Amino acid sequence: MIKRDIFPRLALLVLSVAFRGKLKRFLCLTPIIFVLISATASADSFRILLLPNDGSGDNFIVQKQVAGANILVNGGTPPAFFSTFYEPGSTIGGTTQVFFSNGTVLIGGTSFDLTFSAPGTLFLSSFTLPTNGKDFTVLVQLRFAAQGVVIDTGQNYDLGGNATGLLSFHFENGFYFTDPAGFIQTPEAGTLELVGTGLIGLFALARKRLRL
Image (cartoon, rainbow, N blue to C red; front, side):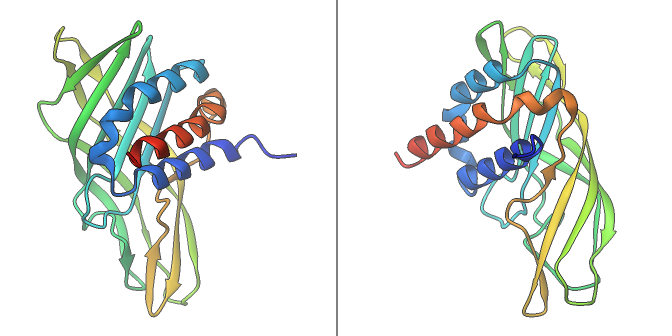
């Protein structure tokens, strides 16, 4: 039997493949994402996708469902904060800013654009890569804080939240290379229905749209 907690990990991997290097085209998929999230989510939820920053564009997505609103925000962190490779013994983590590209909130079937008065703040719990030349996986904590305002109504939304998940690194040619899937969030009991069929369906639709 397939474990239910495989779906959140698979869904985030799907998103990382679908949007890797193409987050500037992400906005065209927002209505599709909202339809799928609305159909599958049954409780408040908070999820983060953080990819290693290779300098090609945005590497950060937050999805939050709260009080009847579905919020979707994407942006980027400085490349040095979460890079594609590191030397053995490097210490990773700390606090950085998140610079936003797009933000949308779905309220009662209507989509509204969000604006931001300041960058967000992202904290990653610190850890040190080994020096033994072996592949490495570590459990980490993310804390995100930001405020967004609906342009049309002036309504303010707290975009923040906490997440626990895994980061993996592969050792090759003297360096530790970050797994392209990035931060793989571990599921919470109230969020398992958010992923699965809905976001797996998103993968097929996203690939069609991104190939256009």
